[in-house]
Image (spheres, helix red, strand yellow):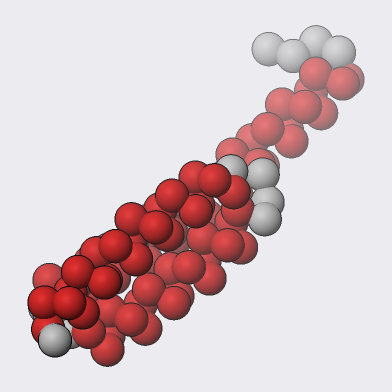
Length: 91
């Protein structure tokens, strides 16, 4: 248990940021699941729309300290690769 005032304050701040970060990461995971559902249904239009939403969510999260910018870029790249493979298969 924290003894000093500063340690007590840091404990509160850590708890608050942990819940915020978990919520943001959960939203990203949910959005990615929606994207992959659209991919599995072979629906290019829906997958493209979901990809845009995922990218927006990743960029917002990467602008904070929740996720590193390069981690978000890597996730976007992998999702774009899947989307492009679906588009190539359809055409």
